[in-house]
Length: 408
Image (cartoon, rainbow, N blue to C red; front, side):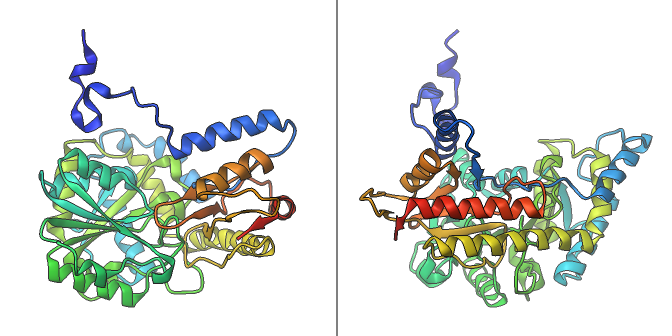
């Protein structure tokens, strides 16, 4: 059987699996393996991890243990249990001041944000349609838009614009085919956090051009030195936006796979319709357990404070090594301009080369971004045993960066 000629063109057709291209995260993985071999006994300082370093709070874990033994939770969850939808609506009120969401019609659970981002194009995109998507950024919605015969118009997030899309420049673009605009605030990887003014401008832009905003709020509670914001809390936001929330980052529930979408009833109904034909819902016991966490602001604040403390330490270390580092508005990432080379004459053509050098020569792992300028992302999710060990890891990072003698 000639299986190669059965593959769909959207994944490469007959050429599927034959590409020799090595993608960014695979390059990082291989470089780390090589560095461990070349430097036996040297600790790999991994600042490239993009998921929480701690377990879910104890009250959530205990609630799961209890819910697992409840026969009522053994069946299909389909589009979610009412208890979780009510808890999600209360969370939106308590954390973001969104008071007008109907749990029954304007909230629907998802098995994390990633599947939701894959489903939304199925609700809206026909061949020839287009979406706007910020770069650098999470590519899932764009990938599925292309699968459906749509096109992706990249919208760069530049330092000169404080890592917000240039809406005035977009006004000069042909938007006649655009149906969706993917944004992500607080933003991965830049750490930028939306302001009320930005959301208001974005809402007005969407209304003028009849575009639905898809706001990925996976890091919504990880905010530093400013108010937490939901686009749905702004006037007219619910009319033009759907917002995606996740339990992964705010409650250390990455592997549990649970989130929800919130927005106007017709949009949420469309997502629920597509979802109903893709999955049968997340295990009810996980939804029950999440209700215990989502109602506890103290746990979320404890997690936020954990990253804030680490990020402050990272900023101090990176500034000491010459990086232009400052506290982000949100997330658990620092996004800093990549060095141009080293004092001994080494030159980096881009952020990827700088990242590879850090791994292979100094056993420091970061994530490079060259989509809109050359930047390195340092994550505050590195492994350590306790606060004292945090300090040790950061001190060791500073020592190794000093040895590198970067030129900027």
